[in-house]
Image (tube, rainbow, N blue to C red):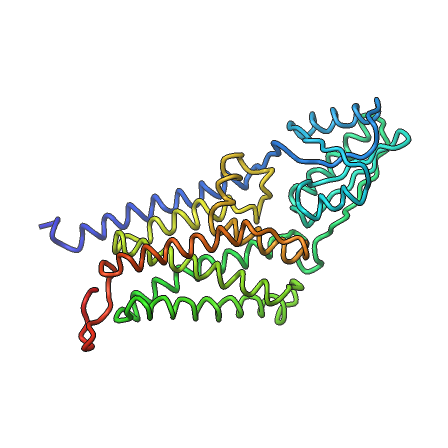
Length: 330
């Protein structure tokens, strides 16, 4: 009968893969095909003036969004806000002129959009505008995508590694499985960082910090799969892929900065491992000395939660072996 033959699960897989392909393409297209600014924090120096008002109104019309202006007393304070990633640009109003400073390292897509709009608005309003990138990207990463790609690699290899342990090292007991997840995460994170920095020279990484961020990302991703494998068995790939790839990567802010993402995705992405990894890596590389605790808390929380679920219900996880060495499900 069809229901007892291998044709039923094969047919189900065909349908699932077709749906996954559509969702994969749709999630990335939705977030990246036409990024639109909605709310862009911008530092402002100088008193209100007709020139400044005219320029700001022109920028908001050109961007079809609002510049969330935050006044600062000195340029040093405004640049500190850029380093803390509280603002994406600095607008200085002086003598009927506008100095518009963007920060490519805060998000190449946002910086490009703001710079192009500032030049266009300056011409249309007759306001003299000077645009400067005060925090440029590294030469080996002119589009600012390398950090997204290395974080993506850590996420995908993280859960693929856990899948392979389940397939090829099925007799591992829970403690051994966690130990080997730690080992491939440390080695894999080192390999990614060494390839990008030492071998290709694409990025000048703060090596130890970047390596540990990648390792923590891989471990969290691997344990997320192990958690789902414990809870739902052979279908664990579905929620893992959905959480980490379909939702997590497009909303991470790595390919498109969060001010250009749909607002809900921009907020959700910061609480998922891919977004936390991108945020931590981005700050480590471009804003040294201004690292935030939040992305590490997110990564650690996912790692601890998934490890705890796996450990508490470890008897349900496929594989393992008896103390005497015989293969059995724990």
